[in-house]
Image 1 (cartoon, rainbow, N blue to C red):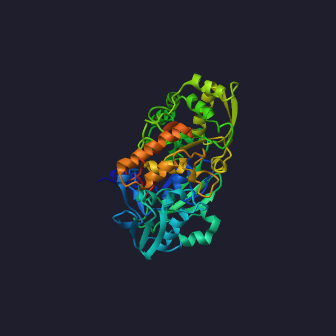
Image 2 (image 1 turned 90 degrees about the horizontal axis):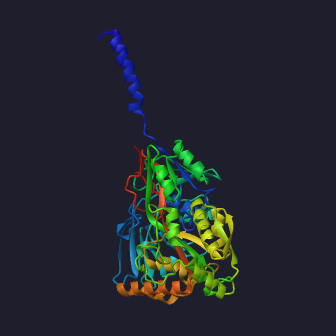
Image 3 (image 1 turned 180 degrees about the vertical axis):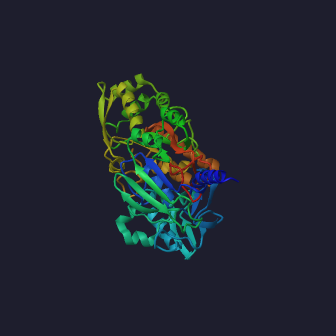
Length: 515
């Protein structure tokens, strides 16, 4: 080989060397539609903003297989196995050994599980306390065995202790040491750990190297707060974001699909947006006014506004796909003349105005503005007080709004949705408050009876009767079910197929990586 050829070969090899030896990217940058994070205590995390990220920080006794939200796909998480008594009232969970909490908080044991489930069942310390009403006691049999005894059987015990809502396990030592600060400095067992939070800018997470399933391939996550849709989309388009919370409308989906190197994720659950009508406030204490609102809602128009790829028409006051769902419930269909006639009969022939607290979260605000326009046609004016999303959640739980627009998905068994939103035990500003914003009492008997009914067919019949009674009392008006919409760069691999996620965002696991 001549000297010239040797030099050229060396130069050519040198140009290839950096690309061949380049280390894979390990920092994930996420754009979220938020002004700031709310509460990172998993038992208090109720907004999409918080629910998405706490699922990266915590585990449950069991979990939904990543990418799924089907009860058939529940698998071991912090518990490696479990068994139930013949009557399904006593459940025994065998815990994994050597599961480490983040930082210096040591090994997770049965003591932490007992503490966590007691906390999750305490209305003062949990937004999911209603789910634990049937728990009689939770005991640590030994350091790695937990026994749960129920007062009566429940539709799905595993659904309560999965990696969602009250099922997340926290560090007893950390909660007791940090007190109120725990909601801002969470300690879990998940693949990622809290590092820092810069208010109104970003939440920083780092890989939990001692994660029991193995060290994550992603080293750092920057969870950036970008409330402006335009700013967030521009940042993604310019390559500043790897993963973005999207807009749940057809125009956004179509536009993002056209971007080079972009992959749009549309996945379950379909969050059902519902107007909860506060019967404790005049004039909504009058059934005719509530019925007028129901007849003024044009669901096909809302569906057209949102788009068929990201939404579907609801048929009941619980979501489609829930065990026990029925569309045969007498739900009023759009009839503007009927709405006006009912208002006049109730003494409001010239219309009325209702003061409503609502979130500034873009997707929910856009949907509520459509509702506002529809109700105006019937003479019902909504005076919207638009506030930051965390403030919205605080205010509606203080019973400060005549109508509460709430978009939610829950474990897909009718009991959960019915108990939280429509049983008197769940009424806001009561000791057992959950999310009954309407002060509904129509179907308490059926909801309670279904919880302990051993016959599956009879149980479903009770849930269906409950829906009919709630619709007859017009506690709430379903609007639309909207699927989750996110977008990610093509080089980001979740490590699983994303079909559903009850945390409302992609689960970032130890297998998630950049190609």
